[in-house]
Image (cartoon, rainbow, N blue to C red; front, side):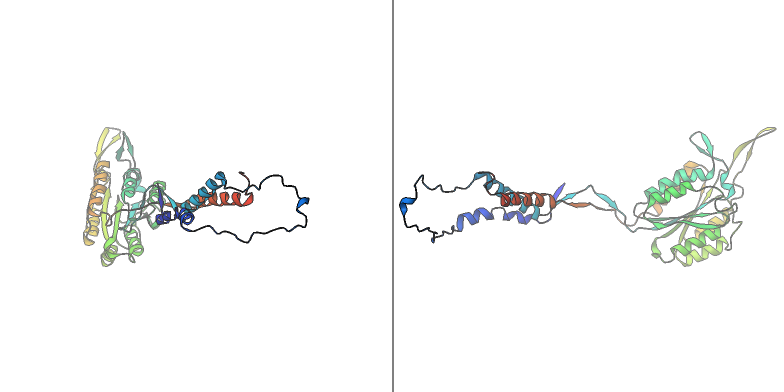
Length: 326
């Protein structure tokens, strides 16, 4: 839609007409004369033709004035409303990329997929729903790495999570280092908005900091941690004597994950399948809502130069050749 920044300037439209009505025309009384000694030397042929206003030139001048006033009113084009990122929570995701994450005990569609693929399928939607939050991504295995710092660019975070691969950070699991890295990246942010969601399928087998010690640092820095244990509790495995049930998640250290979450004011969740994982993320949306209302802005594009150019072109045409329409 089009709006005018200074619409009150349209009041100037009748000014030329008011001047024409109320300001009298100036008459030149001192007419120039040519004195000749012999009047008979000049032949009188016809009466002098008095110039009259040309209507075409008058209409052109009126149009030029109207376009000039139109440009002075500053027309602007307003685009569609665009959602503006607001500072809500600072939320960090820490995702386990250790070798055990390649266990195919989740069903996506009709096929068994590995645990990391299952996380990607659900976490991407969760990230996209965090409108107004700054989201970051930590990937950990033997080492913990900051893949994405806190950003409003949720699309980039989701893309980098999708591009992550098992074993990228090593085959072991450094849960404590991942928590410590999150504390380091979030400690200078607002105390009421620091959240870490840690997803793992095992126990701490690497790193320099134990998970419980890292949790103490997190609590001291007002970082709330939600831990999620990934993996089915039973699955059928074929063998020489037929199928047998096994527990593919026997290595999950649920006791430590529970203590880490509770010591920071968070919760521990167990995701045995995709439905559990999706419900957990829905629950996290309720526990950690975006704190501020969404705000929108409409991009503006100036249009005054269009009527201004037309007005100048018409004025130039009138001054270039006065008798163009006579």
